[in-house]
Length: 414
Image (cartoon, rainbow, N blue to C red; front, side):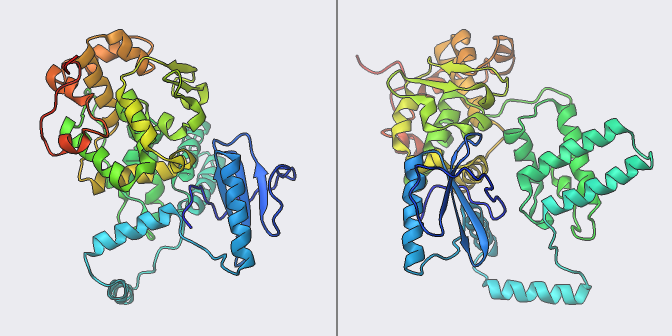
């Protein structure tokens, strides 16, 4: 069974107020948590381990509860891999390049025996707890001041929220950089470098477990203004063509980034109810916007509305972490380079160049004004290519991905 979900081995629901409207199934518990983006939960045990899944819609949760109960009754309820585990396995197979996992494991064990090293077994969450305890001891000894400790604690606790279940040796510098850019949405070079410094110091404290600090692959940010990097029309079309064929569950959120200019964090928090198909508008509650202000986006190109019906319910049931992994996989598998925020930057760049109305572009991007827009995006793309960008639809995507010409937006007959 393949279901949209967010699974956690250590996310027990202790609220005694179980959802009263949920189906009663022996061994299956249903809950409602209004504080979660996907509030409807179902919980069960496999081999003594607690499993949880959360859904945006109650009917999807209830359907899953009935399926689980049926599987339990037939003795088929077993542990299954989640998306993150499958992603890691696919990445491993790609890196192995045909070498059997048994041979790789044998070589790994031989290396451990020869060097006397021990495999890493500590997760980021456990390491963060241990690290912050040592920093608290330093504070108590007055080796660091209270402000420094608070800064360290905040940075490392947030990092543990993003990577807590992974082993220290599984973390890569590229993943840290992507997390800072897409999830934390940090743009100021000084702020980014401060996070980088604290995360690097965290890994240095575990140099026995992690021989090479992953932060070394994450370059310091320059104080100079960064160049806006966007994907070409053909590259963007290639990405969407691949998603349409292989991962339609990604299309809804991906289209909101590429053709509305939503930030990753806003797109990742969207639920289907935020989208008004009748009025052609998207409502972003304050908690889903970086500026913490409520926005109703109603003026946007028709392109996004050609893509939204092509997604499925699994799209809106994904968690932020699941979408982050899926999006990264899509760029890799479609062979499209993924500079930070390239979809949002592309939407802004191509919109202002195609339509020449900075006010509308700023409104679509949820900007307070036009100054940043003109400074960062104006002139980056030529108008002809910008008009072509907005013709990327399910009907033209294969043609554009192949580099074949189509009639640019606004130049069609009639």
